[in-house]
Length: 396
Image (cartoon, rainbow, N blue to C red; front, side, top):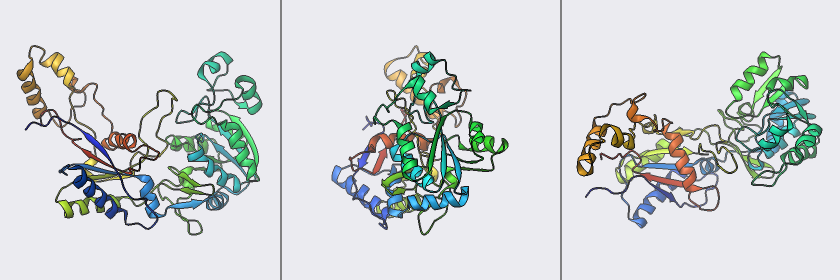
């Protein structure tokens, strides 16, 4: 019988994961139990995706505010630190800021405007246009910011992050100074010791600051990239990708992930005879159209995946074929012509008219976004996502 369904994404329920759990076996058990209960067949090239949160929890990869403070003090001197371009997030950055402030005497916090890197706005764009302020060159104090723009609470959380971050710094016993600017070199007028907290632009920011005379210039992946007093760490990403766990701890991005995905793949092969692909996923790479927030606050969508998920889609646009190459055909004749075209397509369609409008993003970014939307970030209880038919096409 001809298949009438394409890609299927299923959220798979799993136990609550604790530190030290054998997560690879739990994932395998959960997928096989779901397949039996829901009567679906596991096939070669199906995809098992596991959220980074449960991988890090099983690893026990946590750090405390004191751990962060000790690392910041050791690496940045414990005096006056410039903290620039953080995202505006209680979950992602607030606890990190506590640790940074606890390891310093004074913080000059430089916020980008009108929004942070991922789209959390401090200023309404229409108000910015009306103000005459030039965000490319103008440096604002808090007083000038309030004079022009008043109080600006976050669209979704209702938090005034200027007040919130200032209070966090002062609660930790550090002096707080807040400015608004988009040129990283501005911070060097206040201090030469800088912690750049941007995510995807961090390498450029560090390069600019070092070239302009910064003495100690670090990024978030330089903090907690090794254990501090027995803490967890992430050798590649440090504090990037961390989330609030408690008021005094953060869960770090998982590390040593390749072993985990290969373990799950091997267990599935041993228990059901199928060659499935496995990945770990975090934030999806998409933008909310209402809040204008880009979801990707993790350093990458996927920190680890099996080799079969390397690459980008190699697809043709069906509507282009129907409207151009085979415009004179219809019905079964059109279907057969398009199927034959797909079967004969080359391995590299970049630049061809037939592929225009397809999505040449990495497979792991596309699949990770699908997984993030499937599992959500709340109480669905499905930290595992099982995807079928992703590599199918119209000709199969």
